[in-house]
Amino acid sequence: MELKLRDYQEKLINDVRQSYLTGHKSPCIVLGCGGGKTVVFAYMASQSQNKGNTVWFLVHRKELLDQTIATFDRFGIERKTIHIGMVGTFSRNLDKYPKPDFIIFDECHFSAAKTWRKIIDAFPNAKLAGLTATPCRLDGKPLGEIYDDLIEGESIKNLIKRGYLAPYKYYAPAVTDLTSLKKVRGDFDTEKATELLTTKAVFGDVIKHYREYADGKQTICYCASIKHSEMMAAEFCSHGINAVHFDGNTPKKERDQIIKDFREGKITILCNVDLISVGFDCPDVDCCILLRPTDSTALYIQQACRALRFRKGKTAIILDHVNNFERHGLPDDDRKWSLGQKYEKPKRFNADGTLKIKQCQNCYAVFKTGVSVCPHCGYEVKLEKQELKNIKEIKLQEIKQKRRKEAEEIVLDFTSPEDCKNLQELHAYAKRHNYKTGWVWYRAKAMGLIK
Image (cartoon, rainbow, N blue to C red; front, side, top):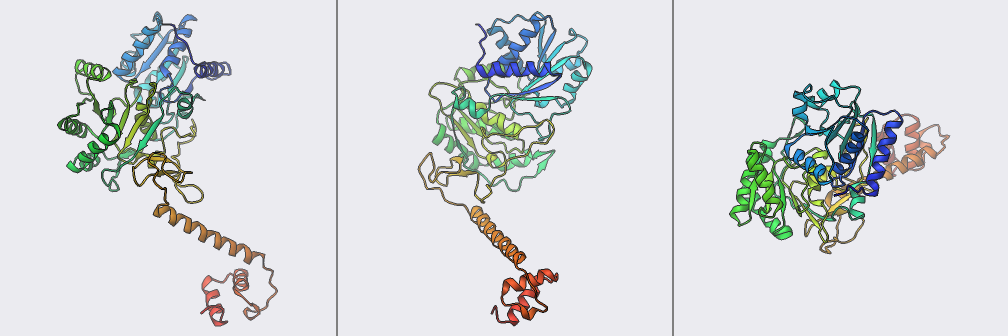
């Protein structure tokens, strides 16, 4: 098959080429999940090989390695001086492979790890290219110590708009109270999360909502821990839904067979922790179930977008049972990435005190504000308690600010408080003499201005 690039992929490659021409050595290239990152880099690797360069194309998981090799084979790209492998393997055997002129890192938001840095430090003269949909570490810290130029390609929002990714519906029916969760090493405590999420009531709610919103659809279910994933798979099976758990300890042969069966539709729900959060290419996934609360925006986007691979007529379903959307926004939100600044999570509220993202109180659908009824079920959109509280506080602050401004504008030529005729003049007099607010109240009461 001939490798044909889409227009945005061609532009991205030209931008990378220009980056090198202007003196950069290690650009970080951003392309939304499902935008064809492997295809872009396969093309770049092939072009570099044609120039006589030795290329290392490195991934961090076995599943991604198999997919990458399959991509090269599908497009008939010979691997004469292209070496595809895993980061861990290459970092332990630096002398075993020909010295690279060009190193490509897939999913480069992991490249601050020691194994990745070992490779980078060993070949300071090699050109570097990192590709990711989320250019920040899992803790939100930037990647500026490794990469020297940020090149942003097509966003998830535009990929959906242009028909390269599937549209989606997002539902967030909470299944338990997670307010007691504490953080451990930067993310939520998985043991505590497992404890909260492995009750019969929770299992029942998850299966109920799957039946309601995605019944029969091929689904990836992201769980808080291996124990949680195993129990969730067993519960689905007990309700007649073919589900399988697998993890990093599952034997290779068995893992390969599970993925094969899942791709062929023999398995309906694939339960895991984060084994297939990154780069798992499966166009037939119609639904993602989020059962792992996370404070990592990168992990959230990688998981939530697994269902967005395009298929004609498809609308993906995302079931967020742990309210990750409240921490990170929606998967296709525009985000401000930086190599120098830590990624800042979006604020939940607009300047007027209303929520930026609303949740329907009837069907649990999640959507952008600006509509009077739920776009999914037509239920009236009402202000929540916190929104009403915010609006009241904003109005109160506006009143106070107005009074302060009016007081500052009053020009007084009074020698004593008795010259003041109203509250505004008393406030202005108090401000000029650095009196406390209580003094105004006392004088106003004495003057009969307040009861």
